[in-house]
Amino acid sequence: MMSEPIVVGIDGSDEADRALRWAAAEAVLRERPLHIVHAVESWPYKASVFVPPETPEYLAAAGKRALAAARERVLERWPGLATTTDLVVEEAPRVLRDQSEKAFEVVVGSRGRGGFAGLLLGSVSLRLAGHSAAPVVVVRGDAADRGEVVVGIDLAREADAVLDYAFDAASVRGARLRVVHAWQSFGTLVEAGLVIDAEQIELDLRNQVIAAYRPLRAKYPRVDVVDEIVLEHPVTALSNASRNARLVVVGARDRRWNAPRLGSISHGVIHNGQCPVAVVPVP
Image (cartoon, rainbow, N blue to C red):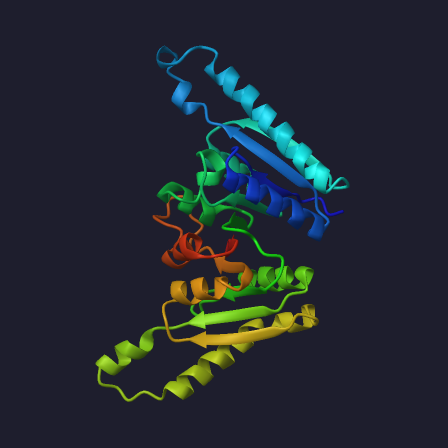
């Protein structure tokens, strides 16, 4: 069994429970241990004048019960899965950042009661997803166990890490991989009065996409790959593709802690995707 765990954050919400099930199935699929984490955010209670002194202890006890119940649910369904738990008294964004340093990937729900399940909805959390040392998977809706793995790539940026994660995800699932590149330059060029050969542009872009993933064909020879060049906004293209996918993979645009945002495309796909979305850090 590989040592880097699948880390999942829980907070007792239904969305976090879906993330827990997805993470456990992922751990079984990849033959990795599962590490379940619950954060107790202490900052609202540091000014003791505002709260009863037992509040932090109460929250910690509730967190321990939630972790024990989550582990029990996992082992009922996957009794052979190596599963550990951790209660961390710290702000949830820092917990995710710290956990990502030793994880294969970190899994969270799309929304919840705060803490982990709400991580990727605010501006700070979106920056954090881009800063994570490991891929962050946001579990949206009812995750399917069939369908394609979809990856969106930007030919103007480094795509090796994103493509490698996507090929690996398709390989372990026995799924087809759809490599999507969306572009919107056509209208701008027409407005500028230039003569456009759309078919030639699409052919050139397709050749660039194929060249980008060609090195991975030898590494993952059994993965069936299709490429798709789409004349529309990348968020629209990937959100549409997510309707029939089991996973959508995108890259984090900027990993600096003080970056103003994760990136409009990743942000848009997280909020509009119809299946789990993996955000892969780009070196």
